[in-house]
Image (cartoon, rainbow, N blue to C red; front, side, top):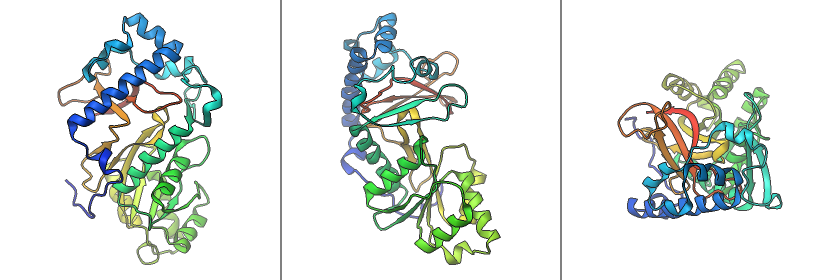
Length: 313
C-alpha cells in the first residue's frame, strides 16, 4: 500500500459513508426505478427484456439484476443517435459523444439533472484527491464532444475552485500559464502530463522551484505504475487515477483516494459487476473479468448492464 501523503477527504459525507445495508437498499430502489423507466420508455429495452421473459416487477433484489439482458456497444450503434433516450429531446440540454474510431460514436445526452449529478460525482473526484475551493485547477483535458474537459470543469466549479479551461495543445503556453496563474491541480491524460514535463525542461523551467502543482488527476487512457512514478517525479505532484466512460456520463464513475489501493466507485450512482468475458456469468473468485456498469440515476439515457469491455481483477 502506498504511503498516504494527505488525509482522505469526503465531499458528500451522507452519500459516501452510509452503512452498506442502507447503500444496498438505495441501490435496489434506484435500480428498480431505472428498469421500470427504460422498460416503459425505450422500445429496445422492452423488446430485449420481453425476449428474456423479464418484467420490471421481477427485480426484487440486487441479485436479480443477472436476470436482465446486457447492453453492448453494438446496441448503442444500432440505436444511434437517440433510440435509447427516456426523455423527449426538448429535455436534453447537452450532447457529448465518443470519438467513434471503431464505428458510429457513442452518444452521451444530458438533462439538466444529469449535469447536476455529473458535477456532484466530479466534486467527489476532486475532493478524494485532496482538492478544495482554495485550489487553481489547470484543466488540460480536451473540451468539445469529449467528456473530459467539461466534466472536470464543472467538478472544479462545484467545489469552488478556480478552473483554467486551457484544453490540450500549445504546451509552452500551458507551462507559462501554470506558473503565472499558480496552478495547484493538473488534470489531463497521463501521457500529456509527461509532454508538459518535457516541455518545461526544454524551456528551462524548474517545476519544483517555480510551480505549485501538488495534485494530478489523470485518466482517459491506460497507464502503468512505472508511468505514474515518472509523472510524479517529473511534475512534482501526487498522481491520482480516475475512471469513467461516455456511456455512464463521462469521468466521475470512480477515483483513487490517497491510499492508492484501488478506485472508489460512486456506488449510489453506478452499480458495478464483474463477469466472465466469454460466458457473461458473474465472477465471484479472484480472477480477471469484464467490468459491467448500470447507471442508477441518469435521466436522459440510463443504461443497465453495460459491457464496458474493460478488464479488471
